[in-house]
Image 1: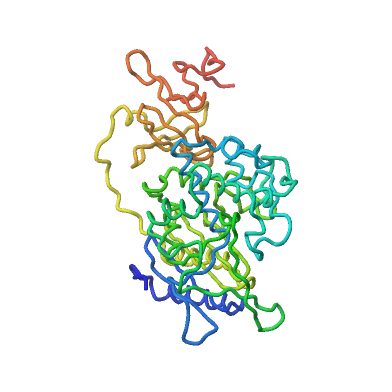
Image 2: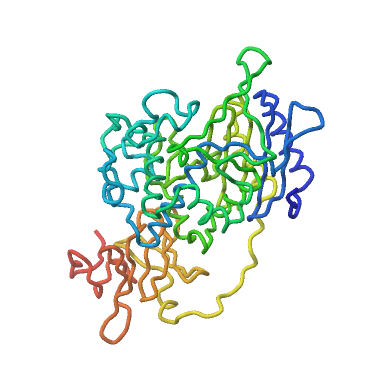
Length: 458
C-alpha cells in the first residue's frame, strides 16, 4: 500500500468518497478507483467494486489509453531540449518517407497536423498491432483529412508518428526509451507497457441490462505511443505533479509549462477546452486544469491537475463506457480546492536585490495607460494594469538585464530597460512599445513624437 501523507478533513474525505461511489453506481462500473494528491503528496484514495469486500486500491493497474500520449509528448520535448530537433521542424527532416512529413513536430503534438483521427481498416484498439506492421499501414493512402496547421483534429496516428520519431532519434524502442528516461527517474514503478499484477480486467457492460462480457486486450504495436500504457492512480498523481513542477532529471519546469500552454484553439464543441503539447487544457467551474483522458475497450481514465490549487486527481475504471471518469477526476480536484483551499506560503523578503532592477519597479505609462512593474520571488518581474482589466504578464530574467515574457500577449516578447549615457533609465522597451515614467513623457522616444504644447484644456 502507498503511504498516505497528511490526511484531508473528514468532511472532505466523505465528499470525495460519495462522489466516487455515486459515479461507480451510476456508471455501472465493475470497479473504479480514484486518488487525490496535494502539493505532490498522495492524500486520499478509494476504490469501489461489484465484488463485496474487494475493492481496488491506488496500486492496482488499469489501462490508461490516451494518457499515454502525454508520456510520449514528454519524450519529444526532451529531444527538443537536448537540441536534437526543433518543434518547428517538419517531421520529414527526422523521419523521412512517411507521407505525412510536411506536418511539423509541434503540429503533431497539438493535433493540428490535419491527420485522420483513426487508422484505416479494422478498429485498431480491438485488433493486434501486428495487422499494422508499418507506418504506411497506420496512415493509409490518404493520411490527411484537413489542411496542415489549420485546426485542431485529434489524431491517434499522429502520436504513432511521434513514437516512431523518438525511436529514430534515440535508436531504441519507444518502450525502452520511455522506461529509461521517464518512468524510472520519476519513480513510476507501477507504470508499464504490459499489465503487471495486480491489475484489473477490462469489461463491456450491456447498455440496457446489468450483464457484462470481457473485452480483449491487444498489444497495439506501432500504435503503442498513442495508448498502450497501464498504470495506477498513485503513479499518475505523481506524474501529474511532475507536469506542474517539472523534474531536472526529465523536463524542466519551463518545458512542462510550455506543454501546458495552449497550442491549438479551443475546440468548437467546448470553448472551455483547448490543447497544449500533449496535454488537454480545461476550465472547469472556474478552475484551470491540465491533464488528459483515455479510453480503450474495457477501460476509462481521467487525470487533471490544478497548478493554482496544487491539487491533482486521477480516476480509473474497467469498463468500455458508462462512468464519466474525466468529469469525476475534475470534480475531485474541485472538492478539495474549495473545501480545503491552499494555505499561502509565509511571506518572506528577498534575500538580496539588484538595485538597478529595484529602480525599475513601480508605475510606467504606455501612452496614457498606467502599468505597474513588480519584482517576483524567482528573480523575474510582473507587469500589469495598476487597476482594472488589461494585459498582464510574467517575465523570466535572462541574466543580461532583459526579461522574456512567459504568458499572455507578451509571451516570448523581450522586455528591456533602455538607459542614457550616464546610466539613468530612459524608458522600458517591450516589443517596440515605449513605457515611460510619465504619460507621453517628452524626454522618452515616443513613436510619433509628443505635441510641443504639451497637455492643455479644451
